Amino acid sequence: MVKVHSQAEITASSPKQFSDHLPEAVDLVVIGGGIVGIFTALYANRQGMKVLVVEKGRIAGEQSSRNWGWLRQQGRDAAELPIVMEANRLWEEVDLELNGKTGFVRGGCTYLAREEPRLEKFAEWIEVAKEHQLQTTWLSSEELAKKIDHNAGEGRGDSPWVGGISTPSDARAEPWKAVPAVARLVHTEGVAILEDCAVRSLYIEAGRVVGVVTEHGSVRSEQVVLAGGAWSSLLLQQHGVRLPQLSVKGTVAQTEVLPEILPGMAIDEGLAIRRREDGGYTLSDRNPQDMYLGWHAIRSMKHYLPTLKSSLANPRLRLFGPLGFPDGWIPKRWNSDQISPFEKTRVLDPEPNRDAVESLIREFSILFPQLGRPRILKSWAGMIDFMPDIVPVVDRVSEFPGLILATGMSGHGFGMGPGVGKIVSDIALQKEPTHNLNRFRYSRFFDGSKLKLGPVV
Ligand SMILES: Cc1cc2nc3c(=O)[nH]c(=O)nc-3n(C[C@H](O)[C@H](O)[C@H](O)COP(=O)(O)OP(=O)(O)OC[C@H]3O[C@@H](n4cnc5c(N)ncnc54)[C@H](O)[C@@H]3O)c2cc1C
Image (cartoon, rainbow, N blue to C red; front, side, top):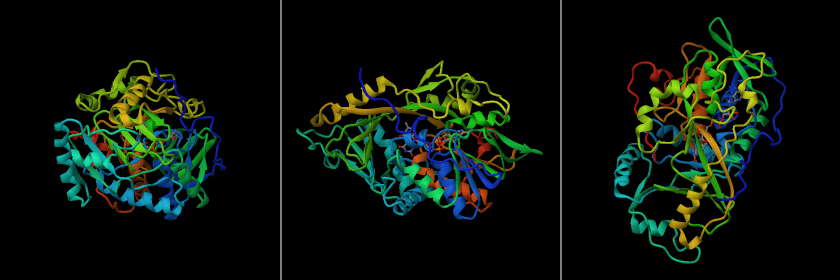
């Protein structure tokens, strides 16, 4: 069994960076200081809105600092792709403004296949890339052997892959520092940010959302964006709003500094690997490993049956989630003057799956024998908020005027975050959307539509 330091970079004990006073009223309250909330705040503020971001724990403490750091356009759902392509440009723009503080590097993304059938999926997706003029190229086994350096380190290895595809404009960024850096920028531009400030409930008057009730008091606002990641459905349940969003645990590991095999990221049937700014690699597995059942999961299960049947999205179902998990057996209702489940778990910090880390080390050693068994410096886990069709909800909720949902990023939100933030700020400003958002509408789960599953790597 691997013995590694297992702690995420941002936890509930990380020092607080933002503690503004709670204003009485603003134009826009953003619930959640992850990438979606912070980029929404950036663009809404730049378009003249007075914005408040409320975060129950730490900025980027949850998914936004725990992810793999892939800013991937390749393989995205056809409806997401234009948004992700815009996000790719916005990432570069904000990184320039921040003098490289997000760790943005256009290192490219390569999908690899050990078995022929996977190549068929790549062929389908290459047609989507062509439609959107995104340059993606086929690579033969020999080309892959040159691209992914099997001569790095001491020995030689042949390509274990039958082929692959690559998108050179795909990029990577460093999750531990990117969103906190953007949050500091947003803050200097005038957005109020509060950490350790949970929203206990929406503030509703005459059927309209008119603000939020936080643990430190109420704030009035004509518009409220819910960008609460894994917690969004729990807050909505409080108001009888259904959202069939669940969460699954993904485990990630950081290696010691190793020679450069590739400048960006690559993924095959067994391993996902990204070059890090510090000279190591971020390793993971394409399948999230664990899904914890609770009331909400059981109630939402009918929406998930097709997803769970698909071979790639098959996490192990676990009956008892750790105490305080959003989908666990926790109370659905509480009063706004009581401590809520959001305060009880300031930062969702699940234990990494040890077997998964062991398997990552094994896969890495098989694929790159010349580098030996990598030493793992750190491992951590994050709960991924995902929707039954693996694409997010970005929409207003017609039952509750004033409420905008930006949640269920389904494992894509780090790459797509700036694009989603821009769209959400436009929704809040009642502007005509610049992308077709039909696929991301809230009503798709309840209006009799047949759900269309988004692509999985
Ligand atoms: C292991 C893992 C690997 C991933 N890899 C990638 C990747 O390589 N590329 C990619 O594009 N995406 C990846 N993702 C997905 C990506 O990280 C997420 O989609 C993205 O970070 C979601 O951002 P968010 O702002 O919606 O949510 P989060 O980052 O989860 O932020 C939501 C915030 O809301 C706060 N909050 C919730 N409820 C309340 C409340 N009531 N009051 C106040 N605050 C509240 C939470 O504390 C949290 O900080 C990965 C995710 C994980 C976990």
